Length: 417
Ligand code: EPZ
Image (cartoon, rainbow, N blue to C red; front, top):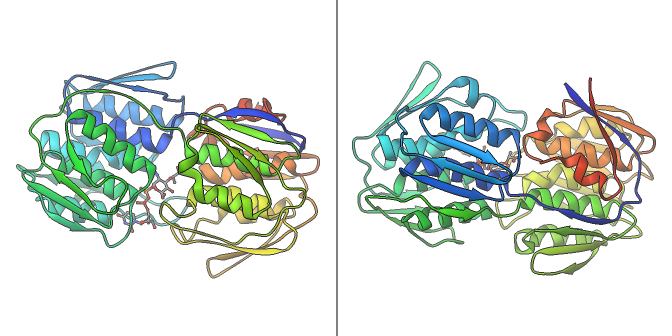
């Protein structure tokens, strides 16, 4: 199993490029199951999760090719409706094939996703919405078995904002007879980019950028070509690396509009910015100010940057609080950061962070994707040497992170332990 050996260096500078957004590409890959013919996705990075999704789509009958940053998916021969446990247990986003399969071949069998390092992650909202569209759903032997001779438009009110449930329902509703209205839909940029892709394919979805979406069912969709949006979480991770540094850092190929709240919080911490259309230059603070953060659905502060922001706060001058209201148990990184001599107390779902002068290198273990990124950032500024093991988590969602960070002065070596 690979691990990172990280030597301390706060003297980073230069520019760093952001890749395509994993969480936008995963549902778009599944959306390709909705039509025969070959769709082409551009700006697709080399990530383990995208390989897992490719594997799943091939099992279902799609032809998937990924050369450089271009991925083509041909949904002409989609015929098999099952997403096996072996893949769903590796990656929960496999649930994204449920909506498209149900819409295209009237049946889907997807292994019920199990536990997860960031907390309980039910799929009840996905299932309720598909049932509202007329699907018959049974849970059998650990599988969600959904069938629908015909999907019919419905009014669906999500009791909680959910990225996955919104997207899965959209992908089923595009072929439903009549009009579907989604209320309290998620507004994340990944939802918008899926809507853009579906509309390009010929779907009729309006209301993008709001919590109310209206879908007029259509009979056919067509393959298309589209540029994938930049990864706002990767960009945010690099901005935080910049905030921990002593020199300015430019994050290129990003969408500043998607990072508004993150930029505001970094400004509160003392950072300054030059913001261009597709790049952000961050000027780090002399002294990191304490900033309280509560994670919320978009446009709120993203849960996927909570762990990385906490690393920045471990070095603040003062005390602050971080609460993750999206995934209230997403704090596995706290104990690991305390091994690096951070001072974080966790009480009833709220982390109290008392800034320390310096973190101290140690051996730590990555528990999930974003926690791994946080530990890498911490290792880059902790005195002496930090070893982060189980880094396969990070390869799920960051493309060559050590190469990118080393290009701005990081001292990270990948070791095959
Ligand atoms: C997506 O997960 C992302 N994954 C997550 O990123 C991200 O943390 C999350 O959205 C929130 O932004 C992908 O896009 C592949 P949700 P998703 O449904 O869709 C509850 C990463 O690190 N809920 O918006 O699964 C749920 O428990 C990953 O890249 C239900 O109760 O998240 C949570 O509290 C991790 N029932 C809240 O809603 C449901 O049926 C929001 O979850 C569905 C969700």
